Length: 347
Image 1 (tube, helix red, strand yellow):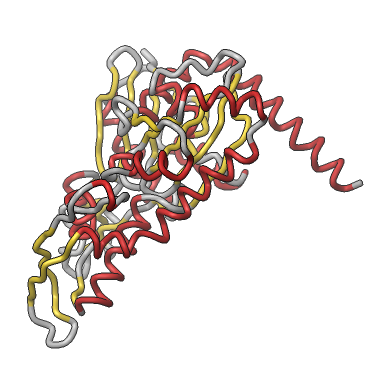
Image 2 (cartoon, rainbow, N blue to C red):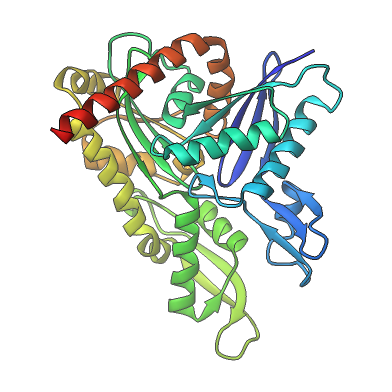
């Protein structure tokens, strides 16, 4: 028989939620392919271990960048693999799938996600914006006429939104996330220490010692190994959390700036609700040490990290499948408002 699946199609990780079972799969969004034959060698965790370690004929790649599809064919193969792994190959009916997308994607990017899911084996494909899915997955009551603010920081994008009456009132989507932090760390270590490091090492540095709000505690240090750019030999250096903070400070400022911009555009009545409820952080990026303290310091509001920030969006996509009629009505109203605005701007 058919089943319902919610997919958090993230730049860094893919999470699959199956109705009645919960999250059944969490894998990195990485695919290893033989360039000569085009055959998929590995997907997920196994492929991630190959990053930066493959021979010339095999390439380990991330088919999603900045929250959207960068390589359509590879994304389709990856989705097919994950769907079959989650629900099996022998379903009598194909599954109905809900996929999350950043709030700022274009129509072309949205259609690409839908088509990739259908080609991967979905019977029906629906999409939901990430802030809405994150709020549903975090257990927030957004059906009432009251303001709720969510900041979802993923691998490729950061989505900041104010929600009310089951829909998005104000939102901003930045192409800034965990990947941008990793890139900034790689560039900093290369510039300051003449040391070349890979994505995995940069991610380890970010998770181990990075502090988004240095005033909150003493600095930490970490031994980092890589290739010396001067003589090409392996080398080890010591980096501190204060140094790495300088590397990511610009990206942190962009995230805080987006939060402030959304607050400035929020209607006064909803802003009053947010003062009472605070801001909820979701996504893997919310686990960056003391990021909640940084946003609280900059906004003067209470900031909370969701109970399971990594899984919020995936859980929300699954829950959204039970309320498709409501979401479809909201989508139609949103599209009508866009058309009206375009006609007004046209004169």
